[in-house]
Image (cartoon, rainbow, N blue to C red; front, side):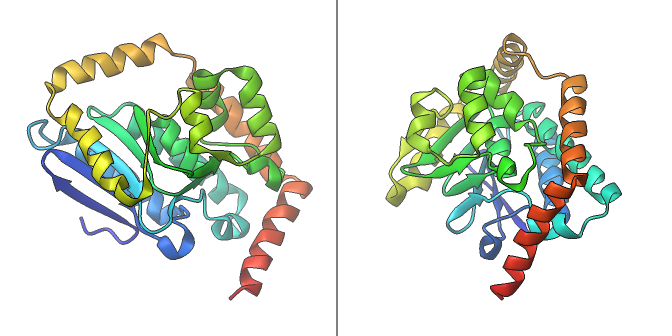
Length: 258
């Protein structure tokens, strides 16, 4: 399949999925989400001798700035609900993937972008990279499991503070909290991320799959019921007067910049 908004390349048993809307800071619209889900399904079904590890990264100066608010602003309620439901398939496509999935955060990772990284098995990031879950600034909450997965990784108190304020986090803080495995210099980030991925590409795939399943079960705290509760809350806030005002204001501001 030829992709328009992502790039899929395979080198030395490593599949690279690169978000490729750099002019939009790789913000994810419905079409792009479909392509990511397709690529994840492809690598999941691929022979383990051909693909052992998946690395997700972004083109340009962003990993992913989150959902495309321009599309958000124009969605019907039904389209919004469908977009959120499809997002659950994307995150499941990472967590349930037969391959090890590594997020290589090369630049800004906000909202859905940070949620994608949190769903990955491991994360590496470029020094000084900024990330976060700023949905509260649009009078919304995260809808892709961000607050759930972050809680599992760093605990309730800090997650509450980060999600309730929507503040920007730097990679070094997340590294100190154990969320990010390694911080690499920007000038050789891809080279170092490749070296890290090759560590796992050299391992026996069935061993990696067993470890991935066991560690996920050990930290299991996300259930379909909990995700449904989160999605329902987000849908309520999206439909609210306050949510729509912020989304439309953001959208109108983006039009003024053109």
